[in-house]
Length: 249
Image (cartoon, rainbow, N blue to C red; front, side):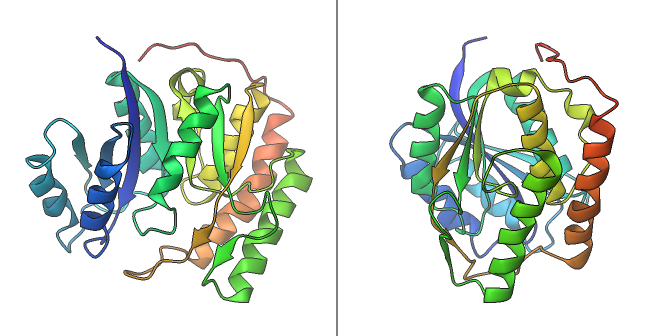
């Protein structure tokens, strides 16, 4: 199977207000980015909007439909497996709500094309680059990343970031079925696993802008999973050996 280059994975649940604009923006970028939407049974018709655009951009837009909300982490795992099965070389993850600027996909790609195994769109590599967040959420996010650095030993400044580019071989080297955190803790566990495997991680400065349309998926339960999940993840790492699995999917 011929290698395909770039796939952007976007998980969705009730994103009809954003998804059409996001599709059109990603499709307009230089570099022929393809798009995979992983939709968790959105009752608002998000999936149908994606399907309508498949005819407009033939072969470049794909969709995985799942029955109900199953968590951010499992959506990305499903997307990663799909990407590897379809032989993509650079695999991106980002939100549907324009909190991540699609234009920044290009600099994440360039970071991986120039040697990074994982490129992270970082809010905190150059100060605090967040727009329209209430100060309480800014502080929670900033100190959550600091907490993760202390617990894990990672030097990554934005440990909870969800805007990333992986090289395919990085994902192939991870046993994705052993990634257990499903909320925002998933973002931390994936970075921790990549770091423990010795891959080259590069942070790329971005500006994060809070969503204007739709509603946030953040909840107290998601935050608590990340808080306690990180501590448990670190404890388990003391008894585990991290080895690259080199599995071709």
